[in-house]
Image (cartoon, rainbow, N blue to C red; front, side, top):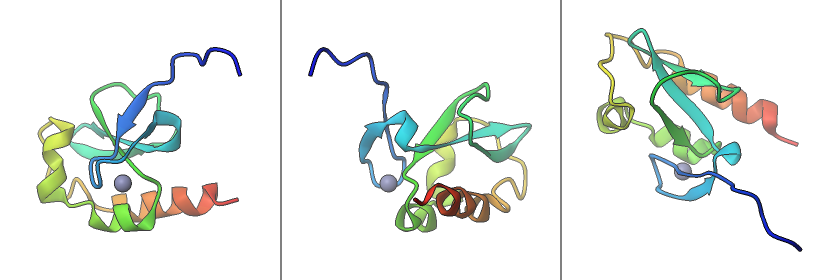
Length: 93
Ligand SMILES: [Zn+2]
């Protein structure tokens, strides 16, 4: 019991589920490219997504680019899905 500390809650951009940010995967835009911020330490505005294949597959460059609020270069999303899937696989216990 006791009082819980401040746990930042974030929302998955795909399904809208709210979860502690440590339970979500962060993606940010770096130099126009979308990168997976595994340590959640990169600067800039990020978006969060559930580490679930259902959400990762539904992540759409067209629909979710706006959540990042940054101009994206051509091919910015290349490899992002694979990277996210790798994170999910690595975190599986
Ligand atoms: Zn989700």
